[in-house]
View 1 (cartoon, one colour):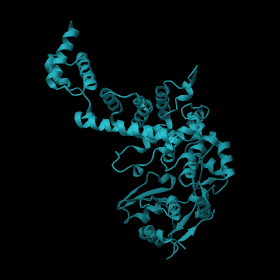
View 2: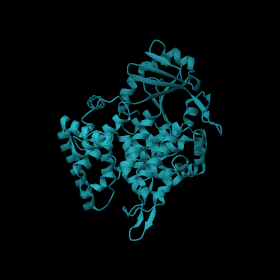
View 3: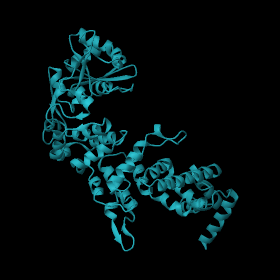
View 4: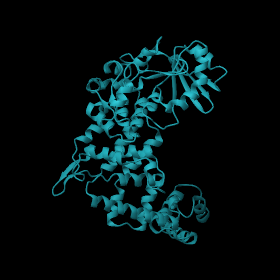
Length: 474
C-alpha cells in the first residue's frame, strides 16, 4: 500500500501519466523523490524524475500540448526536459549505460523494461520506482530491496559494487553523501570495492567531483561521510590534504589529531535555521568549506621548538595558499576560491583578542574581513572543539565581547564601509593634482588615519593631507 504522503505528488503527476498511458506507454516516478517519500520527508521541492519505455520522439509527442516548455539538450542520453507551471520535469527512456575504462562520458543504450533501468542505478535505496500508469493504484517496483535497506539503514548497490562503480566512478563519492545524509551503513563489499577502485575516480571530471563534494559538505552531519572518504582512500584522489592532516598531532587540541579536529569544526557549523534568533545570515556552504580547509597548512608548517613543543607557525598563510590551489583544481568559482581562501587566512586573527584590542585593531579586523565578517565570526566560534567547558565558555564570551564592540563602533562610525573620509576626486581637487600614483598614496595615508583614529571630519582630513603632502614634497 502506498503511504498517504505520496498523494500530493501522485495528484500532480496524474495528468501526465494519463497522457503516457493513453499513448500506450508506461511511466514511472524514480529516484530521490521515491526514496525521500518512503522515509517520510516533509519536503515539497522535489525533483520529479520519471522514466518510461517511450523513446525520446515519443516522449516529446506525449508532452506536446501539455508542457509549457520542452527542451532536448539531453536527448542523446534519452532525456527530455519539460516545464509545467513552476515545476520542471525530466523524463528519460529506460537505460542501460556504462563507462569505458578511460571515458568521462557514458555510453548509453536503451532498455525495454524498468527492472534493467533500476539495476543500473547507484544504490538500492535509489533503485525503486512507482508505476503511474498501472491503473487507479500506483505500484511500487522494488526488485533490489531498497525499501528494506532504507528501514535497516543499509547502503548497497543493486548489482555488484564493482559493476556499479565501474559504470560511474562518481558513485563512490556519492556513497559518502548517502552514508552521512541518511545515516546508512555501507556493506563490507561496498567498502572493499571503493578501496580497490578508488583510482578510477580519475576519469571523472573535476566539475562533477566538486558538485558531489559540495552536496556532501552541506548535509546536516557530514562527519561519517568525510571519514568514509579518508578510510577508503577515496579522498586521496581529489583531496589528498585530508589524509595528510590525520598524521599531524595538534598540541592545542590534545584529544584530537588535526583531521579529527577539522571534521569536528565542520560539524560545528550549523545551518542558519539552527542559529540563535536575530543572528546575522551567513554563507553556510562557504563556512563549511573554510572549516574543512582552515588547518590544512599544519602538516607543512609542523615544527618542534624547545620549551614550546610542536608548533604550526604561519599555518594560516600556508593553508590559504594550499586552499586556493586545491579549490582551483576542483574548478570552484573564483568567488568561492577567494572567499574560502580569505577565511582560512584570517581564521587565527581573533585569538589575539585575549590580549585586548584597541578600536583601531577592531576596525582593521572588520576591514580585513570585509563582506565575510559574519562568516569569519561563525568559523571562529566553531573552531572551538575543546571538551573543557570552562575554556569553551571563555572563548564564547570573548567572541560575544568582540561582536558587541564591532556593533558599537559600527553605530558610531559606519564601520561596515570603512574608507578614507575624502575620495579620490576630493583629493585631486584639494591638492590640484591629476589622476596618478600620488592619489593612491594619499588615499592610503587617509585610510590609515581612518583605521587608527576613526572619523576625524573633512576639515581635519584636509589639514592632515596638506601636512602629509608638504612633508612628502620636502
